[in-house]
Length: 544
Image (cartoon, rainbow, N blue to C red; front, side, top):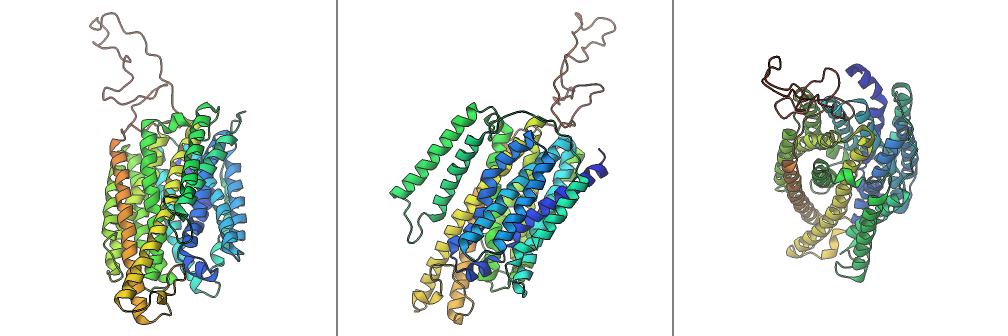
């Protein structure tokens, strides 16, 4: 397929993914208004994000396996239909539990769109050419991520209200469905296999239990870190995940293919993806809260001020994809992205409520650039190591662990932010000789709006310092991504969609120096003399 044909085929796919990503980011700047209207707490704030991430994470491996077994186009369309249902439910929610249910349904659909989209690109384009399209995919994600907070802020500040942050994506999803039907053409070869339902249930239960524990442990009116509830939840999660490993080692079609995720490149990419997930979801989730809580800005302003981060993400994704396709080298982009991610997050860890917005914008641009260099290229590195029949499972495994990192990061760092903000607010009020119950928190997220100026200043300062703490913790976690990518061994990107079996080498002449042999056996070594794999078949050429 030519580049034009591939882009035409991917038009509907990109539209669907754009809609899904938009829905996940559009609520970021609407969350303060949502939580206030539904009388939620800081924990509820985190769980509006975590519910979608958790549902997406635990279903992504299943979607990836389904993509290896069934019609990928049909699966994408099914994902969009489920997404519309979740969006409508969330838009009509009148309580926090109903809203979380809608977000969970959206998350299931986003897991499908993410996993199947990567599998479709892997089935259409060779790894050497895939860098370009992975860059385009990253660009779509970056634009959707940028448009989401801005559009959400505008909607919240308009007469429409926060409910339309969910309703607005429904017509976009319908358009994506129509484009998919018209543009995407895939050949599917049916395979008669059984689905690993037991593994899926164990995965969902084990991961969910652990994330629920992270979200509620240590909170007021809940349970402590050392308690029978913690022991039961952590022990139960470990037991369930241990059973998962046992089941997956014996399953004919495991939802988490152990033989793939234990391969060196995939295992290291998964570790890096965990750290990237924390940085991408946790930091960006609480960035909008910083602008509104610490700087006293509107939701629309908060959306505009996240644009530097998205610009960095867009530049990193598209530029690295083009360069990887041109030169065939990918590890340097992973290393550079990790360094920029750590640097940007560490600098953002120095901000407070008075830091110049130009400085804040520069810091988030740096870690946005790092995210752009890392996200899709980690998937590309893994796809290059697996055959076509496993590309869905391999891609989904990376996305799964990235989303798990994000869900755990949002939950855990949300708890840190809430506790730190409350403690710093109480300390500031005591230092000013004011009663500690004058912040108006009432167990939720303190809101400086409508409070006396002195109290508002104390709360804004608490928000600013607590957000800086979030960035510093995330920078430390991002160091794990750098260590992992340094240990990844770079292999040349193959030019074929599927892994090709090595050709049988002809017998070498008995005497290499005999006349007519040229002093060497032409095909005795399956490399091109530089240690580069040569794709077998007629007129094979060096890869890389």
